[in-house]
Length: 106
Image (tube, rainbow, N blue to C red):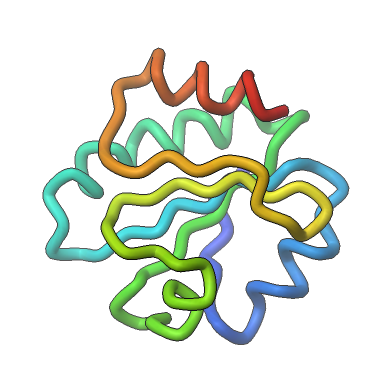
C-alpha cells in the first residue's frame, strides 16, 4: 500500500471516503524529527495495508489544512475514523511506539 499525498484539494474526500482508519502524518521538509519518523510511517503503510490507510500532509504547502486540525508542532500523527480524529501523537516516536499507537486505535 502506498502513502497518499494529501493536500487541501483531496483531504476531505480521501479521509471521508475511507472505510479503514486513516493515519495522517503532518510534516515539513526542514523538520529533522519528521525525517526520522517518515520511513517508519511508510513501513506501517505496508505492514497495516489491510487495516489502515496512510497519508502525509506537508504543512508548509497546506497551512490551512494544518490549522484546521490544530497542528501546532510537527511531526504530528492523527488517526481518523469515519472522518473524525480519534487519536493524536505529537513528536517523533520509535517503531514500537508507533505500532502501539496504531494498534490501540484500530
